[in-house]
Length: 483
Image 1 (tube, rainbow, N blue to C red):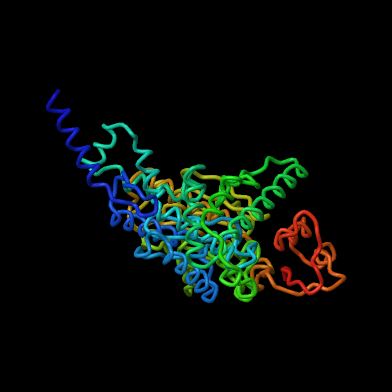
Image 2: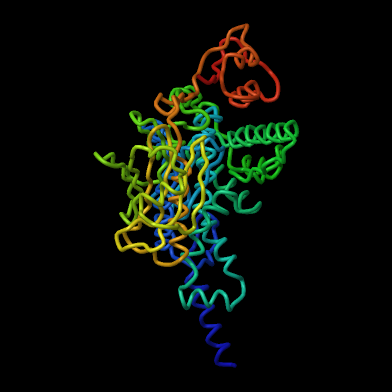
């Protein structure tokens, strides 16, 4: 027992002496990974994120965010870390960071900000999470403060990468808790000051986010729905947060002639940013066949080839295909009988009737799949034609769960088959934020009557311009509209 205690004491001493000094927190970090490991995890998580999340494709705006982010990062406590800044193509109002220098800001948040300084406030807050190593520190706490838990991870090296990889969908996106969020505010405000931005802009961002929360509560009450709780950037702060004001004041006060705000420059760079849902991305995997008049949604990431005798969708790793063939319909034969005749079988397994978009159909699995035969088959009647759909695995699924998941992909595509709509072949109506100058007759109510942005158009315009819930623009003032 004494021997075990000596070993544990020695290991704890080694841990304490091996702690890296964090220049942001000004104290040693008792964390369970090196900076190199932190960067590696961040890179892997970033690669997974960009593979599954739409990225906003605007080189000029992206370069602008990168420029401002790097300016603040160079003024941080970890200036030698390589930072990466990405705009997520989402209307959600949020920003977040991943370990190792990866910062993300949603398109939706950029539409509601009013200056470069406010954007710098958001980015500096996220950089504060990175310099303080909040994701890594939270992982250490989650692993357990007990000696046994710490030693287990230190000695075996297990449990670190897999668990930390889940952080971006929890703490990184939803916040790290009140104390860590305030710490990120403190660092962020200081980095803003160091970079020449007015730290008070952080207060402005809080105000516009709180306006969003107020409107969300009011809308939920009117519609009789439960309000969705906001867990994004700065969500832990009340509107008049005394502690936040204290850390902002502590960062320092810049002379008026040294403050970087850049309202006009921000307006120039964000003029034309997409507003709301990006219709071009909403169904980017939908295949539309104009001459045959049908539409079908392939699984995300699949490539589609329109061959002479069939349309073939292929999985990214070439492990599976979904094929569509077209034949002339045989009279009034029922769909189940027609499908069995196509494959010359008496019965099908896991079969069911299909009734979608006023189309009749049937689907099932062949009773004895040959080595090169399809897994899932379906037939759909549309006009004088019958459409045969075949889902086929090129490589045998690893287990039953994988096979079920693949079959679900096939069924999702099969159920998405429908007649082509006019909206499928016309260019989507993308709405964008534009800036105009108000005159003496401009009101948000009058502007809202001419904008097709759904319900609560006036409220949305007020939120965009920082005039919620009341007030009107002054003559000559630049305001945002949606076109």
